[in-house]
Length: 521
Image (cartoon, rainbow, N blue to C red; front, top):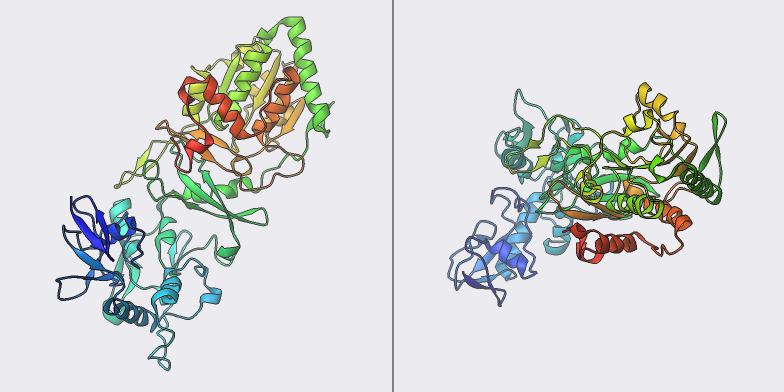
């Protein structure tokens, strides 16, 4: 393996490693625009120039392979001058519209000019080139005046999607990015080009003029849109989600997320949220407090168990619920109440898996935690409705965590045969409307927990939003209810629940939130 020195720091790297990557491993920043670790090398921006002893000219570090004995310098006068010249060239026609540009605050051109550029221009009186903005399709807007022609977006479609959709039209001074004639944007990965664009040329119309990026709070999370478990960054302000972006996890989603996950938060915005516990009085569900709601559930379950035995009591978990929630449901109803009638809502599949050229896959399984539910509950039973219809279940506790949950008319009629129905839900779903007691829960952005994806990787998601009204995180609801049946339940956090889960379920043995970190296990 080659050993080289970069700014007098020695490093040994794998054969084929570029100088730019080697420098990054040493913590040395080499500025770049066209380079992206998931894309083919273009070497066109010339921003990553370095000086290598024995070479007659500066070399582009992204396309120069590290060699044994190589001595690289990234901060010499020649390198500094080259960077200033490149930045000056890029800014000749770049509009000075940072105050109104949505990329401000996370723009590489802005950052690099501050770090490596000059405070003066030799072209102060030159008229800047003005070209029209284009609507590329979908949510993508191309601000031609800001484009520095790094071609990341062009290579993204070729290298990742596997189809050439964008290209550089014209040459020289008139060059710009365009959509190939006869083609159009419309792929589920389109939103990714707004993330990899180093400047404000490619914008997401869903976010334009919505918020300044430095005002946004960040929460590391996991996309609940399918069983892939893509890592996401939920960005919020004033308890509102403004955008979702990808988090790199090479073992799960590489650098990308699909647009289904990118915009999934909008699907939760118009739901009829439940902001306090509800209890039935005739045909109406009226607000109540947590003490009364939990007492009603406890007392009715105890009464039915006493009269008919635990076998007539059932509980339903969900492939949309977290591992912590499903585990607590099982612990409560199997260990404390003594019933084996445990079921799981399984959701639906949507077509087939879609796998792209680079291996990124959008899963047909649209639930984030089927694998986790299968581990916790074992074989998933499918006879819930028949069992209720035959009168073998008289009391049912149902966790709904699916925003698209619907009941058929036949299922609604079957549920009316129950003596008691308690529902834990974050919106007034079909089943919540039929319940005797409704407990207001949370959706993925309002709680902390874990999902286990289709590959068996358990990953943690964290709370991004405050809960509405008196609603609680779902694991906390189950702990509060569990204490009604066993005062020894001492869990105080989702982390405590995971520790208990890891102690009692072999598949999770040794797992903790600390060990999961940001990438999962």
